[in-house]
Image (cartoon, rainbow, N blue to C red; front, side, top):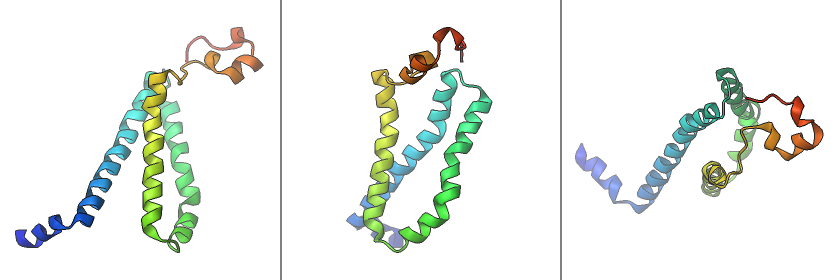
Length: 126
């Protein structure tokens, strides 16, 4: 039984696919665990995190079936590469923005809100 599995590890195409898929799944799990915790650290309530998770799953429910029909008619390899690269860029932008101070825990720091609403009318703590 081990000999049949041995041959798989000798194929470079399989190793590339397996490595990329493992790295992708690691990133997905990071997003599922770390992002809600980061949102909680910004003083959001558990209900707000739950609503955010529901909103995050809504596009999949709305577009999932229709996108599947379209994607099945196109070549798979370029789509996989593009989708995983895009997901990687988006997920890696979160810590980059946090490091650069581009996130805001208060609506007072957001330029659109501060221009349209009197800052004294905003709640002090989120």
